[in-house]
Length: 119
Image 1 (cartoon, rainbow, N blue to C red):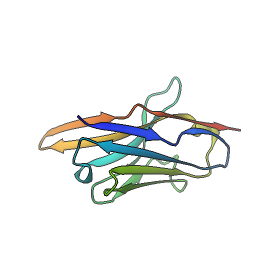
Image 2 (image 1 turned 60 degrees about the vertical axis):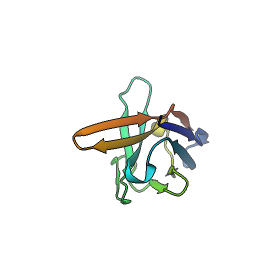
Image 3 (image 1 turned 120 degrees about the horizontal axis):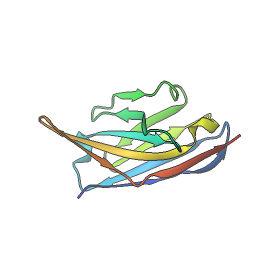
């Protein structure tokens, strides 16, 4: 059973920083892509950043240059360093682990962690 547990959310002023962590268990973490998504009230969940098993990264345009995703395979943990936070970054942030076996793709999700940026 795959479990993803996020931590590190909270309330921060605009311009501040937060670091989110997501600890994974129950999977072969090192071979799966990991990502962070977010969902603001009244909006659809959107991709924030993704990191492949090989360490390649991709970011939403809205966070490029401010957020950094990284992973520590020895600790089965993925991180999201968020700098220069803006009020529009306020959302629930979800950790995602994507397992691909042949043509089958399975997504696992954490419970989410609230990030609130005050102006």
